[in-house]
Length: 122
Image (cartoon, rainbow, N blue to C red; front, side, top):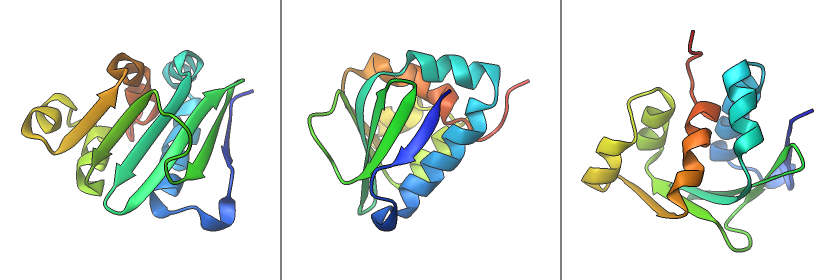
């Protein structure tokens, strides 16, 4: 069964708690579970001064504070921009305007959009 695990729970920041909440909520849906199954590797996410590392392996995502190890994908933006993407406002506009910076193997983020959607799709 898929799980979200904080590697260092006493140090986790707000960004980690938001991501955990969104992922756990969407794991209960069929599209979210399918998206989770496609995720692999390590993703760095940064918003304001907060950074987290998400590592997907063995039906688990381990979340750690900071940028740990070598990332397959890197995502940076304001909390506002990241929440906008989660609320379904799209990712293309923020990327083109420079409000959201993405590096690495960008195609690996596509399943993550379903995994982080704040609203359940019908």
